[in-house]
Image: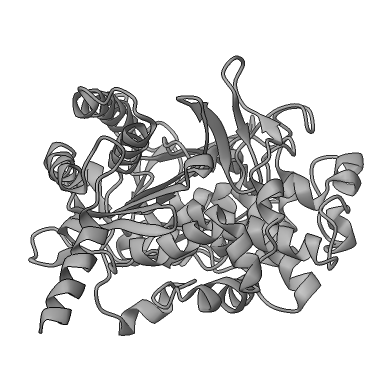
Length: 497
């Protein structure tokens, strides 16, 4: 009995041992304040220091309106924090001599093409992982969002995306290049990216609850629900991110993620256990692509790097339909932080930065007020995107359904069709993406409002204009769907006669 009590006390001390100038009990209080201030249903926080877990705990509920406590084993989508798994896998293969980071991508994927022949043949595997190929931030995300197409099909369409800046002379965050990197893993190993990550990282590290797809979650308990914050915390189901999985498909918990961060912070131990070579860290956490004009801020391979309080900081965020996350590491202090949320708010970054600054010994006075003020401005900006424009009055449709129905084709996206359903209502369908189906209602002139058949996290109000030639024959479509990520305006469908 005495031995049991002593074990319990030691375990408790492991959980409650203080941060640098900050106790885990104070952290718990701060987290509760953040939960209330950000109007977030729930989140989990994990902290590791010198290889020991300081905290892995949940706050709030897994689903709004339900008594479902969050804890360190609650599963959340980590979205783009998956990219570090891909970059670590690619770099591991590089060090093992199975591929070369500086080989052309076309050596492994002959069908890979970008906007220019020279760029296509000279873009390397390394380029895929550090956002410098010349594509604009989030450009092409409409290709993979809610699609049923394969990764290979999507990669073959990338060549139609426009160049945004000079190759290797700028920065543009691109999910498509990580989807491509996932297929490089398949080409080299004969395994899908998720099978490789599962067998090389998740199983050896003991990340037993972590999943690489939504499917297995149906048979699992303690899974958080995504919430669309700007729609009153509307709870939704997990979105299927099968095609973009290499860019953001992993679902994990803080307890599992701390095992991953421990390996990243102590790569010598990971190497001893045969998980990945210690040298991986010196490639992935090395600056590759400068971002901004003045402060040190750079993209590594699957990570972002900056300096704060005299220390190098390694970080990445994740944005999934209804879930945001943040990972922060201070390598020289052996500190790892992960915050997983079931909302689309800045809470993960705010709490993560608060813990980071606590370890760095920086002033954290007023951190929550600053964070919520910034959040309010962000929400106002976000909400303005969903404010419907006032349609011109006294206008009526000048086109008949017969004029508009038919097939439309865009080299970048593929086929889009307009048809009529019951009651002669116009229907919009996107090839390979049935979840993007919508009905069209007249808005003004030759523009129609898009009434999506299901709720979407990243966009709401949108319109499509029917373009015509001088003889008023419909020639194509022009989309306007305001949002910060899924750019429908990159799609230019032409009517197929």
